[in-house]
Amino acid sequence: MKKCLVLIDAQESFRQRPYFTSTDLPAFMAAQNTLIQACLTQGVPLVRVLHVDGPALASNPFALASGLVRPLAELQPFEASATFYKHRHSALVGTGLEVWLTQHSIQTLIISGIRTEQCCETTARHASDLGWAVRFCLDATLTWDMQHLDGTVLSAADIKGRTAAVLKDRFARICTVAQALDDVISS
Image 1: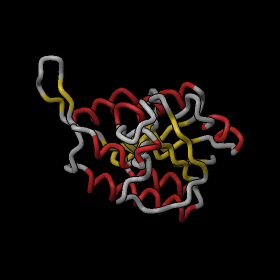
Image 2: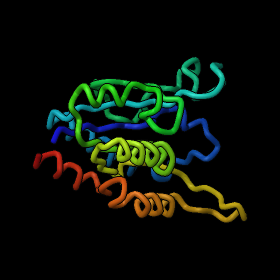
Image 3: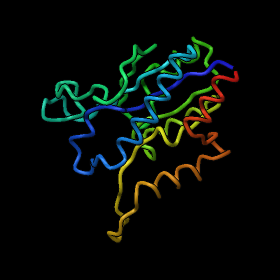
Image 4: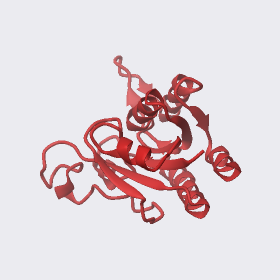
């Protein structure tokens, strides 16, 4: 079964957001870089997806003009098999990714990146609905605390737990980097 790592929105733009903290960044980067290196070693294609949105002004961190729509500095450099720019939450909407995956006979997507509950989860659901097998590599995703309507904090850990619960066995196989790598090596 041909697999592909889809690395979503692991970009410098997020450092400019008011909610950005580096609390979980080291663990995310360690997991992400381990996943990248193993996929490179095993010959698994790596697809980079970057989010571009909002006004095309240098002051907008998600505009190409900002210079921030580029990989996170801590990310292991790699030559992507393909790079796509998205304007929606799903990496499969309007990017050409769906065509690329089909042309390359990809059957399984390994999803990782930023934000766990937004673009990663949305892409996983969409990919599953389109017929791909999905491995959602939870420890290679990153998100930040959010607020409930009443102002109480919903922790990043709780958000990741909720995402895992709603995707598990419906839209994706939830896995760690180690489990994803075992799957890659055994196929």
